[in-house]
Length: 559
Image (cartoon, rainbow, N blue to C red):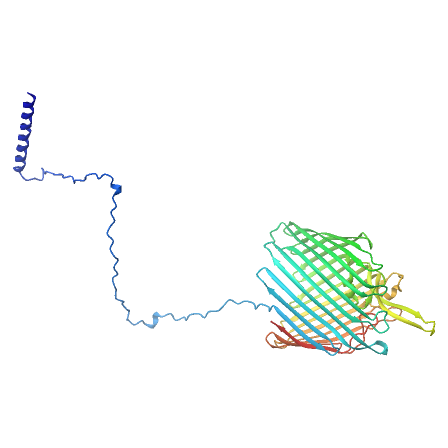
């Protein structure tokens, strides 16, 4: 029964579908009001595992289309061209760098030898190595004072040195070494016939270079040695010196600083009557600076252990007031220790010898006032005066030894220049003036007068004789002139009168000199130095004559 019902329902649906299709075919055309829209959906079946399908697009080779070049052949009127031509290229102006090398060789009439050499290696922007050499000497015959005959004088001095520096970001390192040798002979009739000095040393130091550091500092240590071949009572003195020094500076404000400096010297000697000792010096000070004032307030405290006096105290005070841009008034009270090591003995008088150990000189006070001014451009002058007191001042005198012969009944004498200590003081007044006109001329003159005094006698010699070589009046005048660019001329005069002792004076130093240099090829010059043009007799050491008219000439090269 159910099957019959299904059959009838299906026939009914078929019939309805046919009737609808026929009606659609016979339906009238669409009007503006009625419109039939037929929607057909594109068949898009789902593809299983579509991610596994790899389809690459077709690659086509690129093509380049050639284009013809078109030129603008129209005439341009002159008004369209800029009238200002192109400026010439000019390089940045810089100062010519100094040549790293220098050499000089000269010879003179007394067998004078003049050799100089120096070379600076710029290893990098922060590393520099400097090597230097100098040799000077004499091998000639000198006239002795008071027509006492002639003296075959020989004196040669050699020095070689090395200095290396390295700049870190905030600190600089300095390492140096040097060696020196002096050979010369004494006057006839001297206790010794010849002398030899041997010296050398090693230096290591560091110092701060960065201004942003909280403390500025420097520190160094030096190992120095020195040997003397002959002295009055001993042959073969040797001195070894370990010198250590340092300084630390801190800022209190923009224009105020506090510093403390320290130096320690450890002396070690080989030889009779010479004692090892240690010298310690302390120098604290305060500094203030502004546009008008410059103050330095401090003191020196020195102590010796094993030999010498101590403790000793001296001032370290300076006050300067700039009451105008070019006018300065100052007052000072200074002092401190001067080390009388073997190097200073040679500098004072190389012919001097030791009979006993000398103490260090101590400047108890050097008080003075002064005035500096520059009223016009290129002209300035300086007036000053003061008082100086020296304890154990290093002086020179004559040492005589007599020997009697029982066979002949005669007595012979041998002499020497002795170096010893003596307390001295002096009042002084001086002046300086300097004027320069461009690069053509430079005039400089200075003079200082001193009045010396001393206290009583010493065990070795009359104390008054200690003043015999002290300068009573010193004057120095020189004029530098460059009439043409490659030519430089210096004409000068040096005068030193001595202190009067027992109604007599040692001959004054009177040296009129002329120096000439001419650069005939770039960095190559010839030079000549003429001294004692007035042919005066004078000496710097007791009894030892100076050269008469003498000259040295040679060639100097920069490379």
